[in-house]
Length: 242
Image (tube, rainbow, N blue to C red; front, side):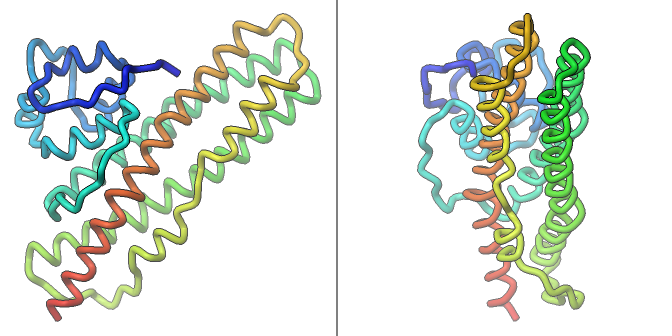
């Protein structure tokens, strides 16, 4: 994984300099729907142009930079749709880009050295991918529509819940760690898998797995430390307004 200087970002920094320090922040921009080139724009400039709360952007960016952030209760309900859009974009990245890419590399390794161990690796990854897909679909089809509904009720001052019996506590219980099995696969590739003349493709697979793990870890922190507390606050607001 690319190592940064753990630079704590600020609003007046040029976004191009920020990316040069940590190129994986390009992924952050993609999840926010921000395009390059960025010219000489600062973080504030980019946020204003794309209607993103600057403090929210900096919070996410500092997570990418490995900064231990002090999560304060500073975000309003208006930021919840931005967070959901960010997470939906990250879901598409996992489903449509990085997972198919990893599977393709595994299949290349299997074709080059068709041993039973590689068959097991492919089966393991397919099962893992199935679990991740289930998790992402649950968020896309159940959690995010529920949160959007809460937001609309607050904005429209409508306290009726439409009879839906759901709360963010269920999401928290369902929110398992989809990163854990990646460690097993990485350990297998590094410690045990006996393939011949495969170092370049093995390295390519490992780098892809580390990249996935890196983004998944930030994805989980955003959900657990920002989204879930914000939604719980929204629920309390609606409950108190009844």
